[in-house]
Image (cartoon, rainbow, N blue to C red; front, side, top):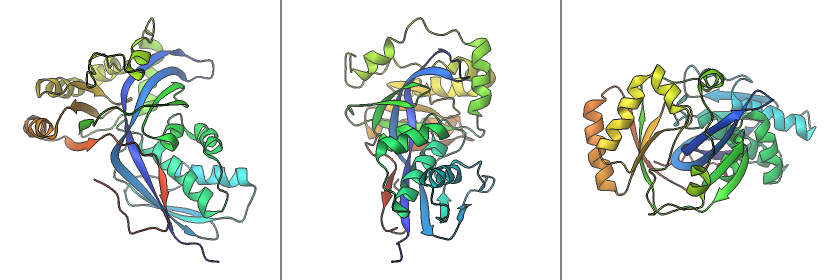
Length: 304
């Protein structure tokens, strides 16, 4: 039987909070963070083939094993012990790279789901999450989606209740930030917080109002802002434009603001566009979805 072409939709994420608690013996950093999936999607198409291959519509992105899509497929193939399985994978990018939005990790999660289904493996979510953690610390989150607390390297996922509608205005500067390079500065420069009290408060909804996010913090901001002061300028401008919270996402370079209604977000976008002409602005919202497979491919419904 000829299997149909399959399509995976892979969401971006924001870090609503990020604490760096210290360095680990394995060279990574101990994190405590709140992930939130958002309505911004990459797509991956998978066709049956005799061998593994990858194409991408974004020039400059690698299509070898250094791309997490192909790395995920190769890892799954090795674990399945079926050496003759293959797939022709096509990645269509909509999530900016090196922005702290998790596009590569989300794509890896989508590739694991796609190939598991295409090859008839149908592995349970827990097993896919374990494989995903080998590829990247954020990958397991994208298999669960919605809102979740991430601990350890970020790979230990605790799903959280989603709150009321959250609207975001994201700013992408005309440069990216390497996560590895930024974290290389952490070991020497960042003083770990005395406690992570704000994270459990946030995840347990122990704030005064449903949309009160003033306790949100990202411990990587001080390092990123020292090297790229325009990020701090954009964040502060979001505050002045009426955001209830404004924060660097992950290691950046994306900076986002949370808004209570669409009208206020629209007015803020007009203000930010006038002041930051070289930046890309993205309006989006929180979603409960995770990376998921659409079968068969329906022509690329990629969301807003």
